[in-house]
Image (cartoon, rainbow, N blue to C red; front, side):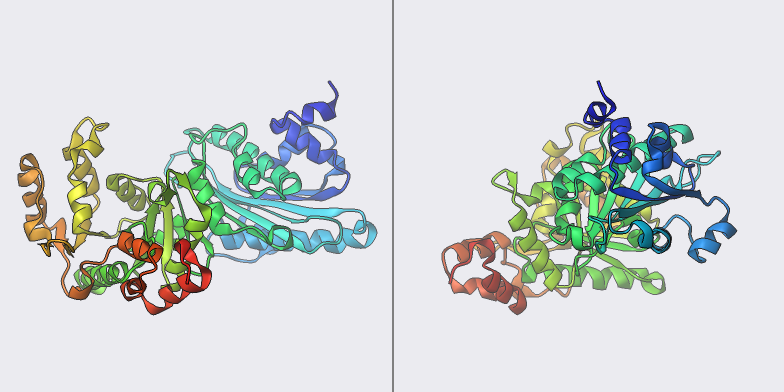
Length: 470
């Protein structure tokens, strides 16, 4: 079998070799920390002279600063961006005049903190590729953030080399298929070794890519447990947003976001902020959806997902997508990044479901273990009441019905302050449910517009979300 045939097998060696044998590709590798793990593959498989213009490893901080400027942290997105920009400009400046007509230049860069000797550091890194899709083209870019999960430094370095080759290969050969691009990033690896919790495409080669959909795909494909983005669609890296901050989360389907969702978050923020007092600082406020909440008729509907996200964006909301169906798993994830206070707000009906024992059969300690995990990180639940539209019954923390065998547990958690009733809620919103909005839209009943904000109603009508027809 020839080397070109072997390259088509798409193992790590084959990917590196195929890249080396592409006469159009030429560029620079710049790596900070954890060794020259990525470029090593391209040197090892042969043909590197046709691909690598320069390889640089800047271990010393003073040397790194001399090339890329000073920074507070060396493993962060701004440092990666400065590396990509500097090296791409250098490559283009030095080589563009002589071979720019026939060469599509690229730069791969990473800045990584692998496991230290004592095992006390956060094992993570930023990786990116800045490249021309064709010779003379404007540059495009892909950035990812990875978490290394192996227990040994050498294993982490090995995994970094593989995911780096996958990223370079995908940027060169899969840029026209974003779905396959994302899927390929963990080729020859497993989710037990590497987690990718952020990806961002930019530039002319990726102008059709919606980074919000790509963020959701990270979770859907189990490359990550959660992904985040801002109201303006900017992809966020969770640890950088949540680090040491007080966090307030509202989980829901937001299909669509209603007056209740907005009022619930407002009430929760008022109480959460008051309890934090002078230590409130910058509260990170999240609307969170699980993959289960994103399912429509058992399958992921991307247009439906975009509709929900754009309506939340219209309300100025930061969004998290996660696969943490159980609340205690969501709490553990948030506590990984912040030792500050965490608040979760939900409706009384959701609180009642929280005490349903069928959700905890996989835990040895059942419902008791789930609540032990949920409340161990100084977490509090803020509960929004509701009114049954058929019976008019009002349900809140004080009169919520749970199974008799769990009544004492419920009362204990309330008395301890783990579960708190929200006040200052708007009585007019208590009987609003998203599902009723959808039914009214389908039935062409215009009263649905009174159940959402004016700009949400206008956007639903203008963009024909959720099957709206005039």
